[in-house]
Length: 324
Image (cartoon, rainbow, N blue to C red):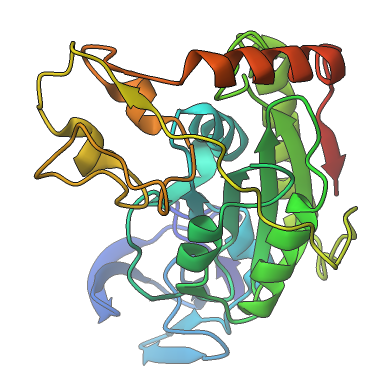
């Protein structure tokens, strides 16, 4: 018996055949080709389910849906990206890493509905580093994703000072949620508070490195059993940083409420967008970045103190660190 795959999937043989019938499985109309004496393997991107095999007999033709081949699924364009990106740096890096592999994108800046992730779908988690830690709200929302032993890629983005325990914290969270972390990385973006630190990053070189990293991860996922990675960090995480201040609102504020609607932690009441709840604010700088009138600013004494400190310890450009 010859083995053929439909040209829409991969054509690996040569034989005359013609479409005569279709099979409806899992909501997808799948063309079947009937001819004399050949075997048709159905596409791996639409399996009946993990660890399941379905077959359908026709005259002189057998259609087989193989048991879910996770290795083949990983290299398809179906990555889930879960990203916490208040000011855009993490989003740019996630987009560059995933490239054409990007499937569903989950915004961790908003509440996340529970999601069971099939074992053949990789998850790319990209979060910022605040004071050496992952923002608690990002961890909380990421936990809404529940894995079934499938692969995850852990990426932290920091403002050129240090990422400290953040990458280990992210990896541990993904592992506890049922994923196998097969790759990890730490990239650099322009500091969200002091823009003169790592200005313009991620730059072209950073984004090129992201593309290389994504390709390396794809190659690893094509292995039969891609192993997990070890990352630096202290399991006894440093304390979450206390916010020294909240953004001020100037007279330029028009009360549009955009900051309130977009605040990841609901620290700005829509009924009074000129105020900020200091107990909720994580100083993510989204309200400052998106205000159409530039009416939200940091207190000048805080900016001066942060600038002096970071200039002394974070001026030398750092390079991305990859763990594959």
